[in-house]
Length: 552
Image 1: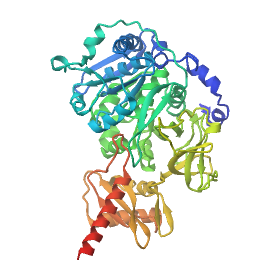
Image 2 (image 1 turned 90 degrees about the vertical axis):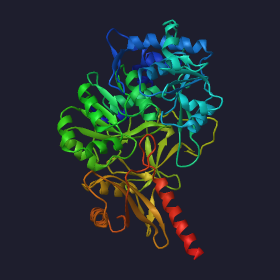
Image 3 (image 1 turned 90 degrees about the horizontal axis):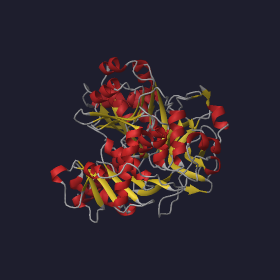
Image 4 (image 1 turned 30 degrees about the vertical axis):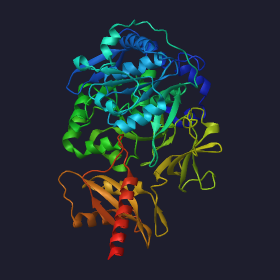
């Protein structure tokens, strides 16, 4: 195994481009990189299981032919290089054909998560100016409520096909397989993503073709994707982690990916891992906590199946790391990234370095990650600050700003992530929380992640979210919202037990003064806990109480 320090110090952008890409950064096509060049006899690209148990396998050669048909269909509908094509599809072969065919034409793919309602779809389509939207019969009705929707191609329309819609498979059958890939430059976009914070509408950002270098590098060094692995990324390609690392990254390396169309359950996850022989797994802490809650039965079923497990989306708690090592005999590593950056921090499966328990890891080679103070100075170990990317020394960084919008994310030579972290003495970086999630209580700064990690160590706790509740004496007090594991019931006695449990493990100022039990935590569709909703809820309760008191 290569040493991390050497890989980081010796990183060469030009050499990486030559070794990763078949073309040059002056003449590049994402379909060529992620499909055509791997279209050798018998080389598989996709293993798929549908929601009703149906299965299919697709080789790179089959996808090359189908992407050619789809590119010809798009061209016949007036789509040209640089135009946007949107996809509102579940994890099906048609989704992959749509993505690859769009890229083959030199157009830009724009994902729409299937849980989006009409308003979210309308916002994204309006900004993208998409020429064509590909959907399925299960999502088609939403588009009746979207004004000025683009030309529609529908999967599974059959006899119910609406006037003006193209039927996906019927339309493909009438097209030629041959379509010469349209070459673009490395700075030209091939994806149009949307990212949202705690406020405001989702912001558009274009992902350039050169980002393929970063996506492939993450799969190679951090995920340690090997030729003999069976790989499954649980993330939905309607979001960045799924589109970057369940589609683009593995296919660019010539490696097959796995799609499961059904909803996440413990049972289905175990079945897919065993039946498809998954050895390398990627997903979110939310999914892993649900697996852990299943207990010994799951551990017995999956023990020895997995070689490497990666986690992204929320910080990984030490309890999850220990459980995977003890019960499944596999190493699970935490990774950090954003839609704007891709993955930039990791405990690398493929590079040797010390692992600091609970840390997000080290900068992925090709990136320089620093911790900045309030005056924009780089902070030494042990001082919390904002995680930032040094653009001068991060050749793999591709984000340059939001499309048609000003951004305050860049300050001088740095991109500010908005996340609060600490640099550790060994050079790794530990996640503290979103800058707006930090709690100030009695003059102390408390990171919600530390408190949540301590709570999750308790056997009764499956999930926890911690916020700062406004308090006239302490500025804020620490409040925890807890989801219990099966077999445990909410009670004042358990709340007190959890408070003392955290107090003994952390400190007198950081334990939760209040504990509220919930059936589930508010999350984004991609699984990130929305602490701001809980915080706003508490502020609203306080205002209502104050108004009632004033009325009396």
